[in-house]
Length: 373
Image (tube, rainbow, N blue to C red; front, side, top):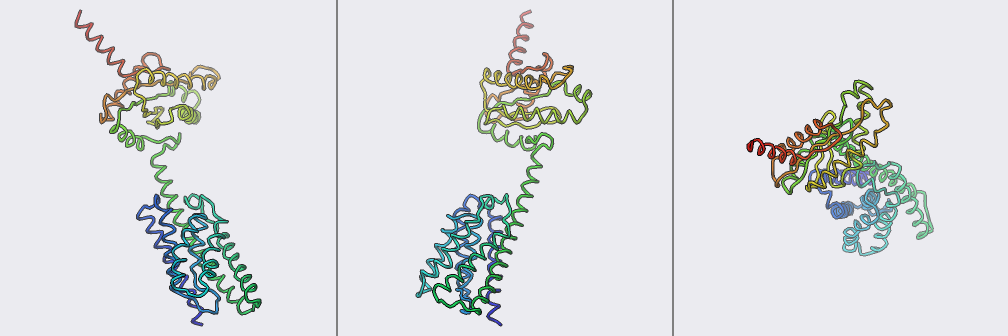
């Protein structure tokens, strides 16, 4: 009876090793090195299983193949094959007889079978691993062992078949527990990612919010000169009053979608608040900035030209632009200047853009003229 407890001990050991590997991965944030560490940890787990041999009556050496199953299922064929290197070498040193046969049956075959059920989303954690895949892999191995026994011994006895069936149950239960553990870890990771996304994303427009925009803009401004565009939806209060807040919310979603589609690829758009948006642009040439902003104004005006059947509330945007004079200028100052330029665009009739630099030049010219008088 004690002989039947040995596989259970091996299974518990393997589950513990898997738990430790998951915690190591989450604590050390080793995603960038996972393609190297996954085969290493899998190979070590297989070797540890080899140190806990099973009774001969089960017809198995040990549970070294189970970690290979998981590597192939989660990471695919290359990682599964790499995972066999360490345990294969260990087998040569410790197993004088039938080393090649054991390697092929216990390591290479599992490394070839399990990737047949691999999905690239399993590795990223965005998709849970189906438990049925674990059962299917173990069933394949069970049938393979029976076939090998029949071919080699020409004597498939009922005691051997029952022992293999018992091992199938042990392997399946162990594999399923490991899959459930990995899926639970992935669910926790996805939940954390979702919470982080919600904290940094505007719920209405799905654009980044100001909280996520500020550190990105500050970091960019520390490295180089950048420009800030303050974008405001014209006549939004009137639109809300005439069509209701639900239509107003829908308009904001549509405006954000149009802007996101037409900004430069390297630029970063966020919702500033209310009907205002903020754009971080790497463009600093005044002429090109003006053309860029005018193009956005024209696209919005053309897109929503027939949005309002009565045309009583034209849907347009106004833009204020400020460019940092040098890197490491305070971001709040650049935003304040862009906001001032936006006010000038509104004052001049809306549906247009204004560069803060032009306002400065205009004020300087007015001051000089006043002094000359």
